[in-house]
Image (cartoon, rainbow, N blue to C red; front, side, top):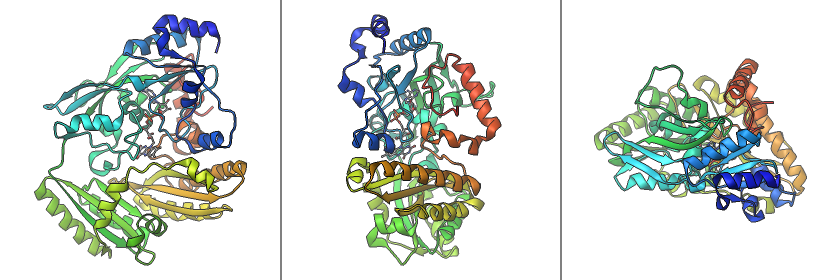
Length: 467
Ligand SMILES: Cc1cc2nc3c(=O)[nH]c(=O)nc-3n(C[C@H](O)[C@H](O)[C@H](O)COP(=O)(O)OP(=O)(O)OC[C@H]3O[C@@H](n4cnc5c(N)ncnc54)[C@H](O)[C@@H]3O)c2cc1C
């Protein structure tokens, strides 16, 4: 980056907040996307940002965005870098806006059940801050310790307890953000509004393309009075989907319902394998009376659908291991390239999405695992979280196989009526597939909105919005 630009930025917000040392630039060169890690592991040259700005206040963010706008310099917000879809891919012209120092709890309001946080607040620390008062956000992504509340909103994240407590869009109360022209807005004032379109959704899922989120107010819940477990074997994925549909359509809402296909049971819960059955784990939470009724109803519906009881210890095992973070480098060393891809579909389509996608992945030479589990359930349908793994000792080939697998999941899902992205966002990875969800006119609408909000095109250019 031009040294005059760096000096100008330092003048604007203070030299200590503008970092150009190579060590800092390297830690902010990419997110957790598998291929970025593969390229770094095999020694490809890293594409580094021109500088890293670490704002200490909302005013610092405003000044940085205003500077970027005046000088037409691209700017990429960085939460905690746990994104998995290449939302962060800077080059030497980019100001990387590292939000991690904006990390305070602003307030906890026990009467209205709201808590305000700076956007860079670590998710687990946010949960711990409210837990002191016996409250919970109820948003538990597997990456809770690695991700920021601003990142959750920017990627439309989902937590493991979403079936009862909702996804991030159900939990967000208001969003404070700096728009690309430098204006500061707070979107969301009252519990509900009919004052035009809900503008919070311009920033939810925008992945840094529409502005910088500086603060988020989240709604809270009382910590649950009681927790209990159910577990069942299903002779097929479809049989388990049918049971889950009947349960939620009868208005029962266990927060966690996870159904693993046989290869995943074999890999993750070996001691619970039963033939080639799928395994459904359910965590119930809430007031004790309701819980007992919910468990009874669950057992009744499971029996009606032909599911057999499994040992509920498996639910405790899942709870213990649920936030495991894969180490990509260790897998590369073992010549394994792997990833997970989350999609969703209506009840009437999900069986076909599962069958077609697994079959398509298995056709890729050197794929040794193609499997899935479901983990987020709705009145209208359910998600699937595919895992693929391939063995290949050529690091260049690994990358080709990776893209081939992704392409197959995207196309098989869309062909059978599914939506191509459930909760990891789109980033640069899914960008070419966005027309499968939005259609060409929808993509054009997204582009029109982006151009109106960010006419200079400074906010995370190349991300999310198809070229
Ligand atoms: C092991 C693992 C498990 C995961 N499990 C889950 C899961 O269960 N559920 C789930 O939903 N996701 C999961 N993820 C994905 C990831 O954690 C989420 O997408 C998370 O919300 C990203 O937050 P972050 O702060 O790390 O964002 P980053 O990776 O830093 O950024 C993500 C995107 O948002 C933009 N962005 C970040 N902060 C801001 C801001 N303040 N303003 C504007 N734009 C911003 C960035 O430019 C980028 O495009 C997982 C990831 C890993 C590695």
